[in-house]
Image (tube, rainbow over all chains, first blue to last red; front, top):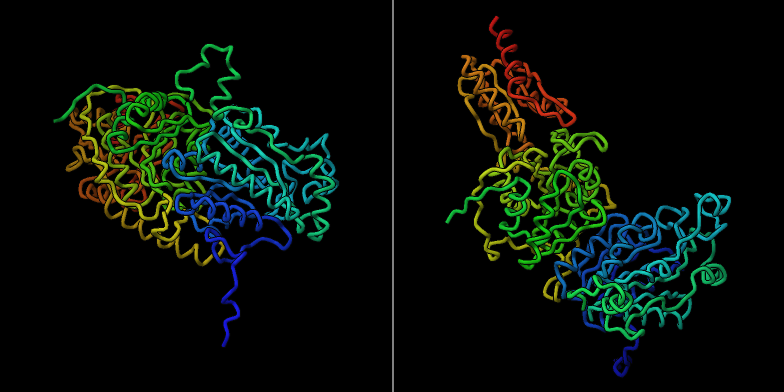
Length: 279
Length: 356
């Protein structure tokens, strides 16, 4: 029998760092794509053996089982604290946390801001789909004004429920941050851009430049009550104007060696901030 | 060579942790454990360790969780209200079988309470340090030397059974200065292997997962049952107590930590008056030293717990005595420390009653 595949060249396959397991994600959601991108980056940088990931509470709660690297499941919102300690224990390893909007920007906002302010050399992959997915579609800190959810059945009333939080914009003021970018994964082009951002964030960490976070504006067709196609349309129409894509901070592109050098330059008029320890 | 120094309880616990190989400390300011964190912040950078002041108690305990998952010897310290905040993280540590040492330098409660010494977190420490089916080992030292010794062995106990261990101290012991012989510094080569830790597998083993989530109820049930078998081993092996003049005692006082010092003075005074009193001092609160209580059955006519709370240990003594003898209580609460004279008065009153 002739082996028809003998001359075939593999152009696409499961990344080594992504295990052959069934995920729990709904059809049409981009969690699976992002999980795969993280694994591809691990393969390309050859870091699966030295990476320790921290899974959140939310739709990605069982993602500790998806990756080939060592994984830790954190309590809701506490991934930045867990990741902080892991990196302090193993400074030569790569540490990332993967968090949704409720986990990162609501219950874990305190941990998020302080890990960023400390300039923890960790990478955060932040999925913003403007809703609590796992618990069945409640209002999130990033839900849009007038967005209908299970707990904002008449639409998010900003006079009562307040306004959505823009995480990249918020964190961009913090001195410990080296790299912040907001991407989405609604098209092959944007998926490629998202991967590039994730890779850059991990490299930022590996080069010791400071804290890095990539926000991925994502969809939740199940809890938005839409088809996957409709949800991408809704995301582009409503979310992207509120959460514009782009780089929010990149200290290296601004001409600094790292976040610490950028911070010191900003504090040039403050004698005490010109610390002997600043890199 | 032994090294005898005069130290505050809080500082002795910190130094002992360093000698036990703890190189990671995560804390948050709270009275009256202040000196412990300050000591760590001064020493850690000089010995290549990490002192990190977390943004909250919640964050600090989750840093302990992370460092423990990463295989390190790690500690945090706080006082009562802060321990309440840590309870979520302690539950996750228990559910993930992570070793770590948590120090509670207790103050009066509930709520913000007082900043004076108290023992009102007995129930929290021994019954409900967080949600779910679990226990932690609880040591209750009553001298600065014992604080030092308990912290030192707490790291071994934590590693041996993969369990969080708490030192239940209080503001009096924490602030008090006594001479202490410091333990030898551990040789890092002697530390146990942690093949389960998330350290990066280097493609030399399959990936490790540290986790407490089990979506299949039966799987979680099996794990809980397995963990409780380990708890039975701890009950068999780790009970600790001190007996003082209990051999012929009619009245056996049961007291731990700071209140045991007061109870001891009262027992000595009672003996001076010819009253046959003795002291049973639990050093582990969980596992509760039920075997030591049973040893006192032959002579004891009555038990009296002396505590700095509203009588939280009474139930454990009653369970150990199992209805065979009466168990009474004397204590002060809210940060008030009972005096030896008050305690002696209670002993006299009991002695008169049982003498009738």
